[in-house]
Image 1 (cartoon, rainbow, N blue to C red):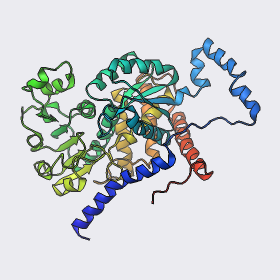
Image 2 (cartoon, helix red, strand yellow):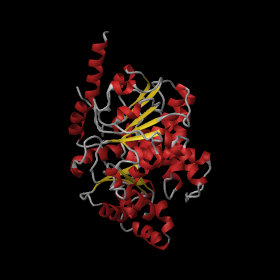
Image 3 (cartoon, one colour):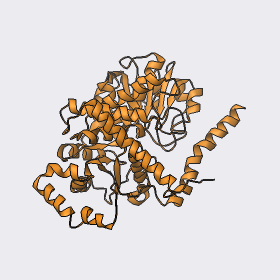
Image 4 (cartoon, helix red, strand yellow):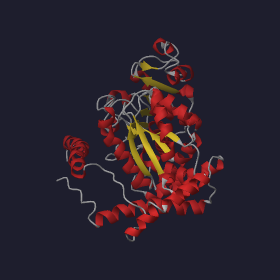
Length: 451
């Protein structure tokens, strides 16, 4: 088969998910529904689960709020909250157009992590109103997953809520994306025989994903002075007056200007990539955002994580042809998916099962190390550096490691042994998959047909 034919087939494969999405979303009219978790033996049971029996449960919680988690499903229920101002590669499309993404996120939470998640698309762009809305929602949810909120207000919202909310709040576009990126990079560096403390890294894009990526990378030994950050106007450096004039609004960008780029390079992505070992790109959807010529100026055995959605900044085969040794994207239909889908379901599983009060960076690092170690132990190579969504054992291990770290840090309300936590995690994840399979077998979920 010729190279030309191979590229055409790859392009056709890349377009197929979008074509099938239109068919199946219309067929199912959405992706999530509510199903009971208790057995209804006969109609008399409603006197137990609703009135008059439920009144006794309410009185018990009123007298002792610690019984709340024991007597309701709130302990395993989270909200996926978004104003839909920065939806994966689509931008500010509004809460109605963004709803399918949040619903899809909830599906991943349930199927991969056994977490009950509810999409909450808010019809406001005001950060203070979003913060207030989340606070109002706290009695109904045990955690909040912030999603697809534009930069820079996403940082302000997260910082405020982490400080003021009573439940764990995290921003998946920051912490989740950075966690899985770190897992992939740990193993990619092992394959090419390079060390985190020695490599030159380029972060293309200065939004939520790379701000958090930089934080985790530096915590794991990467050197700020050997790291260059590039935004839409070029390399960040101390002479960027446009950022200096708005340094309070773009505090992270200004900090990068002061602490990274030890060589004080100027110019654009091409200048930044000269001699770089690693490219971590969370920029705008491609292809053509990054060119093969730019990849060619990187070092031997270069690592390229090109993670824009829905289309990577450069097609992975083009990056390989240009000399990259290891290429990863955010898509499941290409090798090496370093997408947060292998991070957030298990992280929240561990958080909920130990009743953690927050999600720390150290918990994210532990999750990344857990994923990397799992892939290394089961066997990895340049086209398989992290677990896939189909490797349930990796999710179980990750959730347990996160839960144990939360206990170690003293932020868990439940004390539980590793063995007991593993049993709990396995039960929740396996039950979610078994419920789905039983509904399909019973015909309650009709088979998906796209042809």
